[in-house]
Length: 191
Image (cartoon, rainbow, N blue to C red; front, side, top):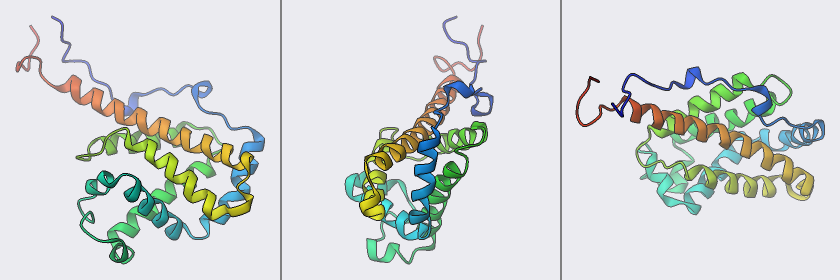
């Protein structure tokens, strides 16, 4: 009565309609593909800049990373754990760029699962994803330089918004599933 404990939501069961996905225009795809090589030739260096800027913009985010939250910026560059995380982060962006012309279901599922994983990190709030968009745009602008014209800015903003939309959905689905799995009023059965 009033609580259905048997219901649960699993990220694996999410059906993503193709028309719901952010479709990228041919022009946007060309723009992304023409600027990505500038960034991807130094994925670790660009990724480091992204995370250093994130930690500067929102210091609370660094505390989420228990394995390296206590390490200063100079020593972070030498941390294998940090470099591995930066590399994985940039590989996600690379996967999205690679999938721009492909059916989106696989990359969307990957992003949903990644968002759900972030929901398990103590201290990570869904609002932190917005910091990532802001920082990515800033780092991309610096790295791309004079080629970061309005068309490039808009195309990358669409990509980052797309990524964050599915990360947030995965995060929210995990939280919802966790809430639905909690017993009502301390009782684990429904009568």
